Image (tube, rainbow over all chains, first blue to last red; front, top):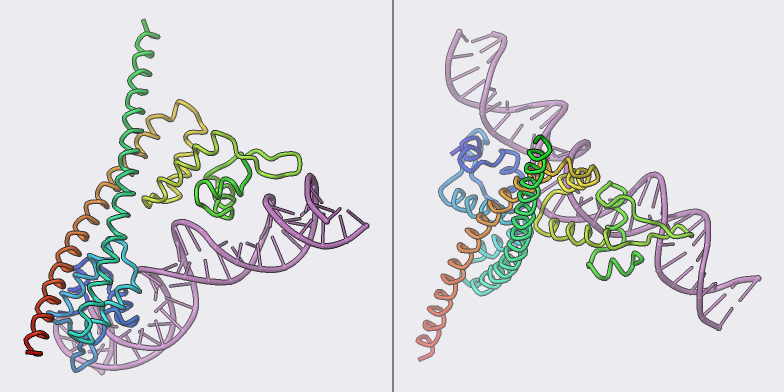
Length: 128
Length: 128
DNA sequence: TCTTGACTTAGAGTCGACTCCAGGTGATAC
DNA sequence: GTATCACCTGGAGTCGACTCTAAGTCAAGA
């Protein structure tokens, strides 16, 4: 798969894909005879994972560390688990925080709806 | 309340508070005789709201627009409701996205735990 | 053969949101 | 009276994460 297809498939710009490669988040992408990237199965799985993690706001640095541990093989399983556990906890906390904000927003929207109803009522009475 | 107390109370740096003021997110903070900010009740309520919204990732620009509508009085109630509704929907979508990532993380962590158990079993068998 | 278009690279630029700095003022402690 | 300290201002710098630019290569179609 060439960069444009991957870009399309995962809705990331080719620039972003190349950027991920040069910072070491997605290393060793294979090139064909004329130097063009040919993304393989493993690359695609990795990209999907990265996209998912990034969409939840996990920092790129953490993902680079995690990917480097994967490169180093089975001996790093515990370290990898620790990274994911830490990020899982941070993410859960962020979701809770955002849920609170969501509740507040809903509450405020409701209040505005009531205020609008009252305004409308007053307008009708004003007309009569 | 002076800037240091506000900073303490809401866990934001004085720099951030001054920054919010100069970009128009928190205008008209009163100064005392010697030019020092004196935050009043209304300022504090606003700061708390801003902090809550920012912690959920709402963009500063949107908050500026919202605050400007508040300044303009009751005629902007509908517009304000529309802003909050849009942001509420975006936030709900982001939370859903993050929840998916959280699920994936939990799933991966579980897989790592299983892998670690197997590794431990092998070590014991290797010893015997 | 020549052009088009997708790709390559290295490096610079942008954006949102702060964060820091230099130089200055005013009230209080010694 | 002078030193300290918290504050002030305008402007510059930083950080994470892209995003864009310029100059070049290569394969395929008219």
